[in-house]
Structure formats: C-alpha cells, structure tokens
Length: 294
Ligand SMILES: Cc1ccnnc1
Image (cartoon, rainbow, N blue to C red):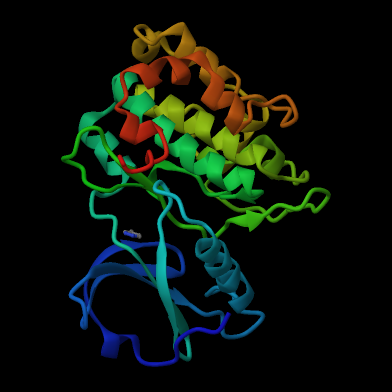
C-alpha cells in the first residue's frame, strides 16, 4: 500500500492535540478543500533496526491494511494516509466525545443499563472483527471513544489498531504487548494467542464499567501479572452488592484462564444479560441500519 507523499500540511490545517500514545500523537485537523474535520495520527517511523523508538513500516502497513478493510459503525474509519521521511500520518474519522475512560472517571461507575448500552456496541464492533479473524489485542477504556458525550444513548467507536493482527489458525502470536491490567493469562505465559485474548479484555472492561475498579490491578506490573495468572479477583460487595447475577455470570464466563473454555463474542451476544437488554436499548444502537423505508 503506497501512501501519499505530499506534505500533509498542504492538504490539512493541523490544530490541537487530542490524544497521544507511545509512538504516536493524534491532532485535530481540517481538510482545506472541504472544511471537514478529521483526526490526524502522526506515527513515528523506526529509523534504525536496533532502535527501540518508533514503529516499523511493516507494523504501520498492518494497521493501515486492517483499517482499510474494515467498515462498521462501531469501528473508527480511515480516510487516507500520508508519508514523510520519518513519520506516517493516518487521517482518521474524528471521534469528538472523548474516551470512555474519561466518561467513566466523571461518573465513577455506570448503572447496568448504561453499561449494557456500551457493551452491546463494543460487542458488535468486536463481532465484526472476530468474524473476519482480526484480533484487536489492545482493548481497554482508553481505546473506546464516544462519538458525542452528550448524546443518549452513547455511540461508541473502537480505535487504535496498532496492535491488531489477522489471526490465521495455527499461527502463533507471542509478542508481549498490551496494557498489563487488560492482558489475558496466555499473553503473560507466552502461549499462542488469538481472538480469545480480546474476550478476556472485554471481561475486565465490563468489571470496570460496573464498579470503577480494575479486577487484577496490583501495586506494580508483576503483582498485576500474578493476579491475572491466578485469575485472582473478587466481586467486592462494596461495589457489586446491587449488581445482578446475570452481570456477574457474564463476567465470570470471560475471566476464564483456559482460552478454549472462555466465552466467545457470539456467546456474549447470546448471553441473557446482553440479550435481555436489547428490549430497552433503541434499535439503532443494537441492529444494523434497517433498509430505508420504500
Ligand atoms: C484520539 C482519536 C483517534 C481517532 N479519532 N478521534 C480521536
């Protein structure tokens, strides 16, 4: 995939920073010819092979390939790509409602209907990816963005496909990555990883949505890894006293050490906690757009 070689600043007016990661900065930008607003993700290219800084061209092309082939209302869309000497710029759909992470910290935790309304959309986006054998591998509240934080119910988009991989059965992905709090036991054990690793992360995210607490977080990375490996978590009554058995059951089927026994995304969508909620969540949030009325 070749990227546009012109100077991105000739085509877009680059304005304020709206996000940043290890090797990338995201800035709001306006396309000069149309006035449309986008998010420009500047990714630093790895210069020398030995360097620990920057991202390899191969990894950037993987992210672009995945974003180019997916199209779903709960997944960020890619408009175009520019390349200069030391960086690649992804021009992405602008998601202006901020991170689910910040939305959560303002409210501390969500009611079950609010949590389910988010979870249904996360599951729809993930179902679309897993049906195509694409694993996200970095699911966490920071990578779940709200389209508009004042709208009800909230429309969300999954972002940051920098660690995403096309999973081919038999291929083993063993590179350690992701954020400690959200990684599955098999990632810590350097065992073959695949789609089930995302389902573990969804279990962690659900726990956090309902309680504001992170189930495995320890005082340092190694303690967190210890808690994950032992699947050592509990539903503290201080936060879970009013949580339904269905919600706990949903989480318990995801935080399963054996990835072969863990709930898949399809299992999640069929679980009563999610299915039961489809009644009070407006159709536009849960169903694919219906064909326009004749
Ligand atoms: C941070 C971010 C990324 C992509 N789109 N909008 C905002």
